[in-house]
Structures are given as C-alpha cells and as structure tokens.
Length: 99
Image (cartoon, rainbow, N blue to C red):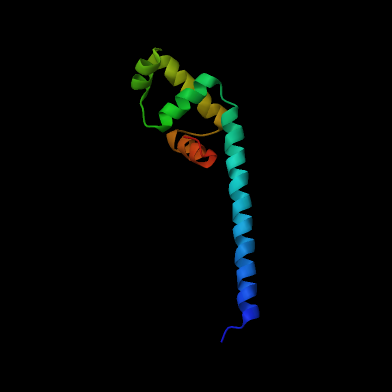
C-alpha cells in the first residue's frame, strides 16, 4: 500500500522533472530565436517560405526576384543558422515557435 508521503514524494519528483524539461524547452526556444535573428530580413523571408515547402521558382515569382537570388539567400541562411537543409531549418523554426 502506498503512503501519503510516498505519493507526495512522487508528485514532487514529477514536478521537478517537469520544471527541468520546461527550462530546457525555454532554452532551446531562446537559442533558436537568437539564431533566426541573425538572418537579414530577406534571408528570414526566404527561410520562412522554404519552411512552408515553397520551391525556389515559386518563391522567385512571388518575390519578383530571380531563382538564383532565392537560392543564394537560402544558402546564406543555411550557413548562418548552421543547418544542412530544409529539415534543419524547419526544426529550428519549430523550436523557435514562429509561424
């Protein structure tokens, strides 16, 4: 049979683990936001478009710039963010909780 003190101890341990997880989540979110803040406005715009699954050609048409320019901004954003591609970019945006 479980005693009241054992339940309270278990609840306290759970609360402590949840508090630690929350602190780690806030740190990851903060770091992701700081990384994204390093982008130029155009790099940020193209990064967000890329994360939505829009290809270079469609982005170029929408932004009225060349495909090559889109690709240069995308590559620059990847470099600044230290990600290898779309998956890393999307993960970073999700961690930053941007829409």
